[in-house]
Image (cartoon, rainbow, N blue to C red; front, side, top):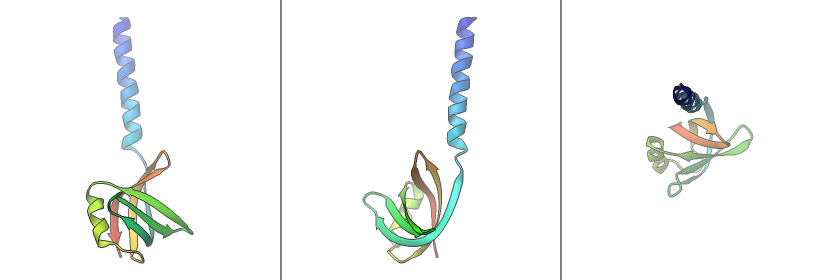
Length: 92
């Protein structure tokens, strides 16, 4: 009986930890590219009166090669633990 309770408790904790990841709020920001670092997969954008840094992973990282300072972009991102990660980058 105790073993079943323990297994159920672990299953509930795993499910709760995964829901936090799955439901991270997606945000959008539009601004001007300040810098692009393809080696580090990062982009800095001037928006909302400040410079915002984003790490870029997966398909959005391919877009970095076509960006330069001064370009207008819209970035779809998630923010977790103070780190912004771009999920999509649209130029224009």
